[in-house]
Amino acid sequence: MSDSVLDLHLHQAHQALQQGKVNTVELVEHALERAHEVRHYTNAFVQIHSFPAMARAQALKNQPVTTRLQGIPLAHKDCLAHAGQTMGVGSPLQRQPAHIDSTAISRLQEQGAIEIGTLHLSEVIAGPSGNNVFLGDCHNAWNAAYISGGSSSGSAVAVATGSVYAALGTDTGGSVRIPAALNGLFGVKPTFGRVSRYGAFPRSASSDVLGPLARSAKDCAIVLDTIAGPDPYDSDTMGIPKPDYVAGLEQAHEGSRLGVFQTGTDIDEDVQTCFEHLLSLASSKWGQLVNRHSDDWQQLYALGDVLSKVEAAQVHSASMADQPEQYSKGVFTRTEPGLLLPATRYIETQQLRPLLMQRFVQQAFAQVDVLLLPTLPICTPLIKDIDMEAQGQVHHLVPRLTRLTRPFSYLGLPVVSMPMGLDSRGMPVGVQLVGRPYAESRLLSVAHHLSLLLDWSFKPSQLMRQLKESAHASP
Image (cartoon, rainbow, N blue to C red; front, side, top):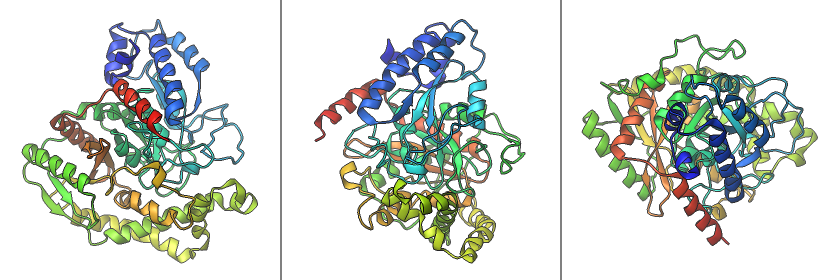
């Protein structure tokens, strides 16, 4: 029974609970059993909270199911505050237990979600590969020899393997979208300010966002519907009315005009093949796709890089000075330049941001509502080929993985990454859907209908068998 239950999507598990086909205790027991197995093969879990999860499941067992998340096992990136727990943030730096819950966690708990653990992440949420010197690397859910992507590495792997039905990640330059793409998932980077970051460990205060990873657009919509909205504890959240993302799945895409965003970036042949297939399907439903571009594309990446480096350096400057040995070489060398950049350069990135946003929307979205482009320009790298600690490698590897994601973080635009096929090695390939500010409902709706055209699906139980085989085959 465990395989069939864990193969369900979140909304299907909700229906099974409502119909009495499974109860919360059984569901959580299966999830915990899978989580321990996944931890062994992928290192996706930092901690598994068996006893608190089972206690909560027992308390909900005989309660009527009144919300979409009641009794649903979830787990989240280990950079969100939980009262009484210490978030590890993938680092040996010592921290005190939190006295509060992050707003996103509180909202999920209020809806009856059951958290079963905390998930692997790149050190101090800095890194797109899923490698971590202190925790050990996180392995891809489809094949243990490949990287998971980061920094929300465990969030992607836990969902893809069926350990949980959805997970929260954070995204500063691609940290939700990259692991979602590399593990065959849907991942949402909301508009900056759409979801409260209260209680989340920061990297870049001007770019950080929280978003869900799940196996369908509908599941992402359910989680986003719960966590989005204004929060008095986060001054960046805006008082813009939040739509019903689940209700919007069927109709929000209607009348959408899709465009192909041209970046001039070299794209791997397998990625391009998947992308062209997706474009042909998209044109059959939404009509001719027009090409769009931005004259500022290269500048947007550079400015986003400056912004994240300076703000990360501000977060870590004291501990980097007092405890440099508590940082890996890769993270230290990526963060240290932020201490050396002049204040005028940082101010420039902030002043240019609204101007470049306006220009990007006017140019790239002219007669277009949704832009399409690959999530990564390259196929999933092997773990053995990624060494962030090697001399000079971090400055070469990070741009390879974030080239197509970071500019949208700088602009604060909403993006959904979704699967668009498999490469010649059987590894997932992702595509980004980019919209105007606060267009998450449209993006999720288009992603939902694109996934129907692609007929995209996989069973975590089958993936687990594949994962075990690859793990045993790895040296």
